[in-house]
Image 1: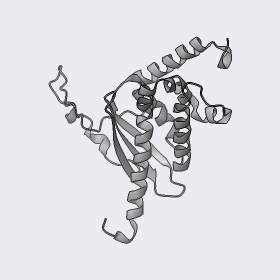
Image 2: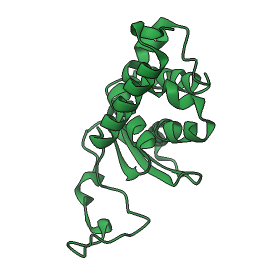
Image 3: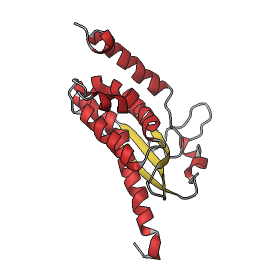
Image 4: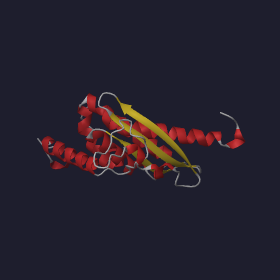
Length: 199
């Protein structure tokens, strides 16, 4: 029996897997700014990864507030630190999103696809995308019935197959949870700025 795009379920599953593997191999938005908690040394140089990538810690956009969130999935060992720069002007916009971390191909691919989806979007748009992605992850492999929601998710619809496996859903959601938390922290620090009040 044929599924979406006139493809069988097996063909679609294979296409989804290829997209996820490609996104994991060439992840968008990945930077090196977080300390590597495993503190593994590079055997070729003897240098710890803690010594690398210090330059991207600074805020790149004036009139932006930075928020950062560290996420860890103990089930799989996935770990990511997500940093966002949110504009101070209304409507608040995610001017930049970058992340650092390691984990399975699902978590790395989800972070990459999420970066492409939310960077440049307003905070409200990004939160709506996050809610729609959550809905996809709750579909147990059935996907979303709403064509408009599928279109909004763009490449993120490939994670429909992941939603069949409860142990893998956390891998796919890791970056999205970090993005929401980082945005909340950036907005909270903007709220503290006026009046110069102490925390």
